[in-house]
Length: 111
Length: 122
Image 1 (cartoon, chains in turn purple, cyan):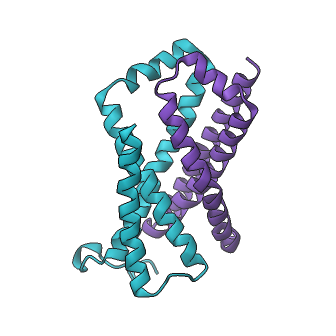
Image 2 (cartoon, rainbow over the protein chains, first blue to last red):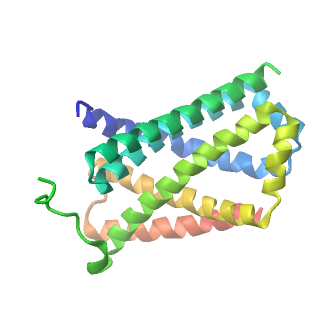
């Protein structure tokens, strides 16, 4: 256990702060997505500001989710080997999701 | 060693305390929102793949089950955000006296309900 828990604690709160305004931004956008066509959504994400904000949100969200889920696993799972396995799974899923979003934004940007 | 370790409090035999309930719900919504964040990635990925793939999402999105999930998603995100702000203040040692802890808890619930209703009024 070489992890630096103090810096993880701080990172969890820094990502939380970043997510507060972006959460409200994304919910607001989601309301308008509902009445948008496919082309309009593509157009929305071709804007650099929108794709930038979306990627910042996804990055902060995935770090926040990873740290949060890890803490929960540590608190409620007693077996050390299970904790290790679950952490690997959490890391894999959050990293893959982030890469998926990054790939998508880049692909939409160069369409 | 594992046999001797002190166990965490058995949730079922304790009197339900508001602060503990808030904490548990923060964690439950946290897990749910984590799953949700993976779905957001899937959503943007389907958009990037093209209109044929996005149609798949649109069919699911038209169902009433999706709308119900979306409603609870809104409830969860607002709860987690407002309660999270409360925890951020606590990280600075602010608002930690019992009266403020309870009042900010009630405020969290009020804001969560109001924000969710506001979003679904649209």
